[in-house]
Image 1 (tube, rainbow over the protein chains, first blue to last red):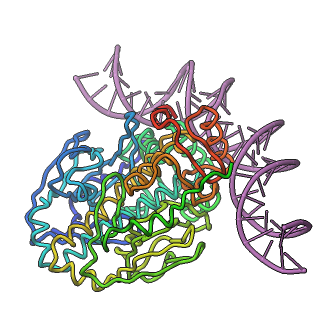
Image 2: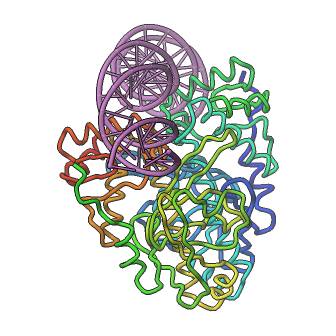
Image 3: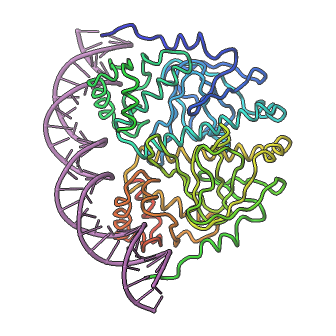
Length: 239
Length: 239
DNA sequence: CGCAGCTTTGATCTGGCTCAAGAGTTGTGG
DNA sequence: CCACAACTCTTGAGCCAGATCAAAGCTGCG
């Protein structure tokens, strides 16, 4: 069953971002962060490495160049919750913009590379550049919209609907970025998916098995194939 | 038992916002939206009236002057989820900033008044006014932080913890605004609280009864008294 | 090879949901 | 002012989705 794994990371670095224009996306539509006129540089990270941590002084925002991350928030009791899985083109660290320090942790799920955009020069440049200003606001607003969607998902749907929404969301994002939306490899563990969806890892595993039994997807460990996108979407309205 | 109801609304309009400076807050800290140099006007709304609806063309942001609102998102199947309860000083409508139309509904929970800040002149003014620019970003970032906290709450805690968090959150916000943090009236129904917390209304009612039995709060319909703030906070870590 | 971490699957338990009844509250019109 | 209707809230009983506990497979790495 160990069939042709998708070299997602490699493909990513070949096609993204198109010419210094990291593509960013919070919810449904796209927004670009045009940084070609702003100071920035690349930084590679190893799998498991932390890019920033809650409480760190805010000094840059980041665009994922290739690879993938998890963004987590932690409560007083150390309970951790994944709240996003940025992939190539997504922007990270915007939550630091309010209070001068980040409010979440960003950890690489695989060997990855980010585009570091120091905030001071970005802000300086935004003073004159109206479109850059607009884009920044747009990025922030889209993240709000994404989070509102997440709140809706967590507040009002069942395990099966959540997992289906997760798969469809990933699939859509891969399509937007030019990868296969029908066949991809998960970079995160069942436990991380569970945290993201407010479920236990066993439940995630069971739901995946159940979706597979019904012929909607094929699951082999980390590899996911979407066999019946319409059927999967139908699960959203059911569960 | 119908003892001295708190005239929250009236007090609100007397003390907020201080001198055309609606106070806004997304999560823990404050941010101000300085609008004294920007076009704006007041608009009263009756209980139940809708200020904006998802899909409406975005053209203004709003600061609650007095009264209270619920902000809801709705999914494809018409499932509605409350994602915020803005009160005096809070800003609404920022999610419209990204795509040109609002992505949520805002409904008055009681007769209220908002400060309408048309976006075009606000944006125009922000071009030169660096502090206004910063404040706008700050507001957006704080809303992201608030939403992340909400995701954490919905994803990783139990019914009791959620209700306790809701009460503590409200209490803190009332304190910040100069009202009693120990004795207040809820403007929303049990069903709306349930929607906000991802619980059914019966569960909200039961949890409130249970907290009351244990002497942490006193509940009489809409009126809430926090009898043991520390004890209530302890529930957060437990549930 | 052997161990550690991840995933699947089974069995059981339980917190919160569902269904249902009744009490309290608010608004309306006579 | 009262009576009635429409809500809203509380409380009980039973049930079920998802959590918890437990035991194997798989994978990958030293």
